[in-house]
Figure 1 (cartoon, helix red, strand yellow):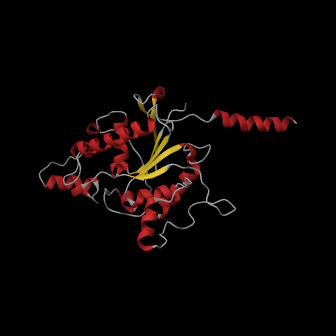
Figure 2: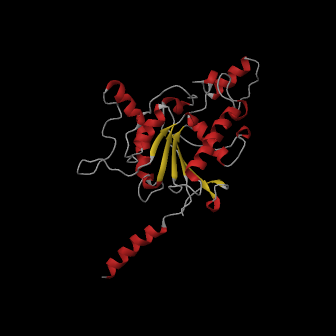
Figure 3: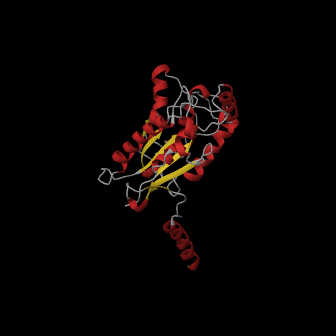
Length: 271
């Protein structure tokens, strides 16, 4: 049995992620460049013989924020269900949203290409860190604000959290709850259907914290992980054992596919 994996994808670039402003609850669209890069990521990494194989996905989790949902759309997974946020909008005004364009590629016969039957679930557990009083501020501005308030000029979100927002303990609590749900419901050995890959589309700080908690690290110690806008990471398990979670630094090439292709060419040339 193939060891299940969890793919984490940070939403594409926004104006605030581009200039370093902390974006938690504020709704911002992706930039044109952000959309372009996410489309490129989908073409490069999503497909039958790519890193993310849609047919192997058992569940897709996405943040409630629009920037994460738009990112998921642009990956072109080929979902068989309508995106929940599109359906909600249509139920309200029965109009096409800006995402009801020709983003999803279709076969030549005009039908939608179905590549996965994974259920899409919006969950608050992977919304971005609530920055509270620091929403929209850059790190240098936060340090200056703290200095003026007599808190000292140092600030580390992993250790200090955000006044009026969430603390490292708050983040740990909701991520641990989510990880327990994911493992017990989707990766347990006795699952029926069997364990499958999971895709999570969310935000920078929460996904870095998620990766740290996945392997049991205390986020207050600063996980020292980087996930750029539009970046993709992979988590899994050692020895196909959910009690041995691990960060997958790099996967191997699909050798059987390569051998099949090169072997086929060699046989053709030998004729």
